[in-house]
Length: 303
Image 1 (tube, rainbow, N blue to C red):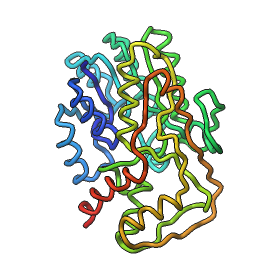
Image 2: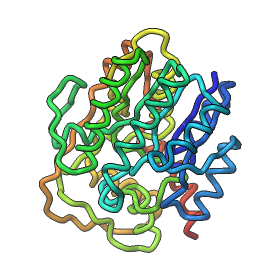
Image 3: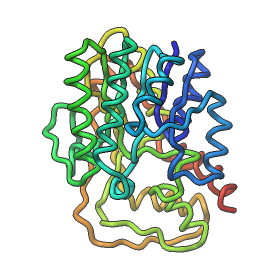
Image 4: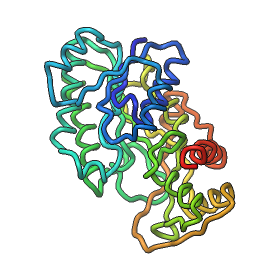
């Protein structure tokens, strides 16, 4: 299959392309490469080993149309966009929505049969315990609001024009070649410099998901001949205290300490039974194994 991955040199995107290529698929990467350090960008481009087009979605419809007229893929996996709230604050929400719409228009025009949108568990807001895809949505920041709005646009547009789609809601994704300002790498960086690992809330938990488990789920949703036009939670589905994660990192590094601050942030684990039943999704990597992989990379990256 010929698959276009937007955000193709982003953290998740470059891992996804690498795995798709290993399965024999032809991949195209579309990204504007904004917000990525030159060192990380170079590493990721070497990994994808696929044609990369530098386009900002929603900015120039003629440029995007020309790209699709030449490369028209069989499927689109839409990862491009800000990956967290801090980036949303720096970007225009109109541009984010316009980017999704522009891709949907290309999917309609060039008769692309599968559109996979990568949303976020942030659409649920705070929650305790396990949460299913049909739970009420209550995003608490602009990032979650925009993800939920984009989900709605994808569902209605695809239904109107007969495009099959799947929507993925990941949670707390981490792995090698991730940005250094995300939680796992921030913890490792602090420990490597023998500084406190700052945790916002003693009881704060996250459903840490290694990137390879997420990409497995995305690929299953992209290739599914049945069970499309669905929303799927994709995660490790094991809620872990951030204090436990910090302790593990301190043990791996051999130094560091923990500083706990007050917080009302509460996140449980995603219920992945739907993805397991319909897609055959099975996560494999726990944080003990995943953190070891990350440590091997980051200690060489930051010295």
